[in-house]
Image (cartoon, rainbow, N blue to C red):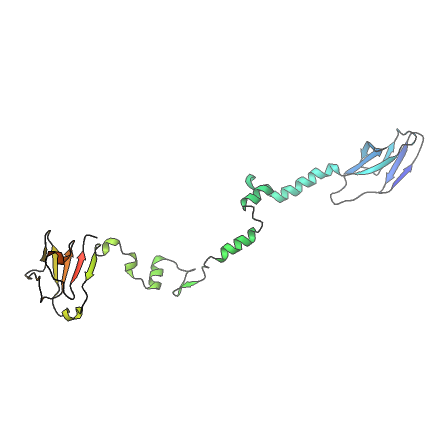
Length: 226
């Protein structure tokens, strides 16, 4: 911005200059004499009538007035309605745990997820993931949803080893605990306590051998105390 002095007298001078430009726009010009501001103008000339010998003058771009507005516009666009808890860089950093590699962290975490496009036993998980469909695909049947009470009550069957097949053609006799010993539950069945006898199932809290029964191949005891 070249300055031209004209109309110079002992106490005044008129400064003229070409327009200045910058990236935010020039709002005006400040006029300085001997390093001190003496005035401002939006025009391209200024007359100083208070000169003394050895005074120097200069016209300086007046851009200060436009800066606050420009900065405000930039920040408004940057925030764009962000909530109060996320409208500073510090708050944004805290929201991602100050992780400078946040994008990489998220990508790594997502890579361990099973995509819904996968199939399970021929079942497209992205289309149908209902319980019944999964049971059918896995061949689980209705047992997968049966209640605990649908099964035999708790207890441990102790099978006496041996050739169980030798007794398969015989009747299985059931013996139940009556408080002191085992008695045959089958109507009209004799309580066998010694060989030979067909396979028997003892149901009660006491080992049959403790009350005089001899366990043979194929006999079983369901301990109801456990």
